[in-house]
Amino acid sequence: MNTLSYKTISVNKETAKKEWVVIDATDQIVGRLCSKVAKLLRGKYKPTFTPHVDCGDNVIIINAKKVRFTGNKETDKLYTRYTGYPGGQRFETPAKLRQKKDGVDRILRHAVKGMLPKGPLGRSLLDNLYIYEGTEHDHEAQKPKAIDINQYK
Image 1 (cartoon, one colour):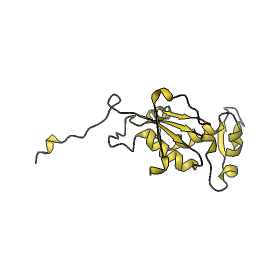
Image 2: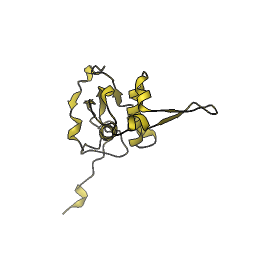
Image 3: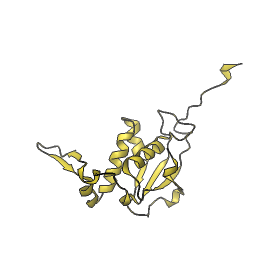
């Protein structure tokens, strides 16, 4: 058997087949939804997955306002940010963040960002995520296909 004829195919930026997908986040749990979204962004569900290349899909999340937390996390969980000034550490719960303009977007991006690789690749992958609070989105020209996120593991 000639083992030299078998070569591992490594995808690069030009040969990666990126798709556009729409996910409906109605009544989805934040952590479970975001772990699947992170895998889609990374391209782990594809047979041509390459760890050091952006070969994942562009993900559009609609109805992000209807996402939910389990247990008491809506009122007990704390998000920390720092203004840059002495004594400028600020804490917010998800319930308070939801009332702000881009609060739901910040909740979901924070969760997905923690599940992506740290470094330049992870930062560029996060640019492929688009979050909308309602059912309308601006990406009809890309012809995204709607997927059921519950069918993914």
